[in-house]
Length: 99
Image (cartoon, rainbow, N blue to C red; front, side, top):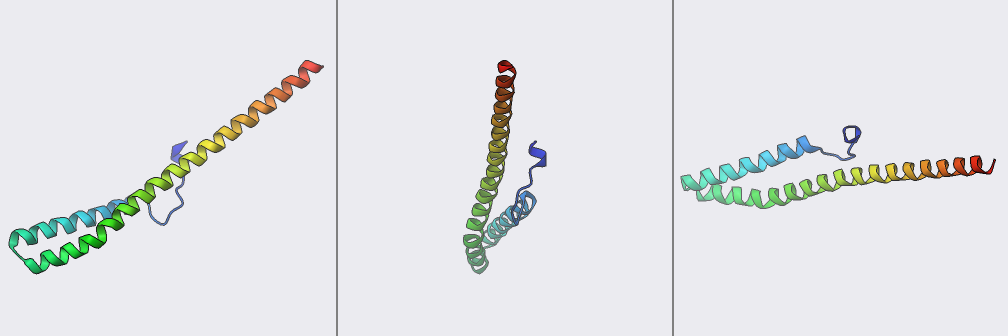
């Protein structure tokens, strides 16, 4: 059932992976600049990381919330279908018993 679930969002897991890879690349470059003693580039990478890191964290949390919402909706629909089937079965049983 989960394979047929479509997540309505402007990004998906593959795009999130690309952004996470970009964040890791920035961290590696900042570390390399630090190792090289390049204060200016360390400062630039630090500024970029301060902007990029929260964006990635929020995007990851959003994607997880949306995935959970889709699963919760599917569960609600399944429970509703089960209730309706049980109700139909009870009604059919009640009419059969009265005959």
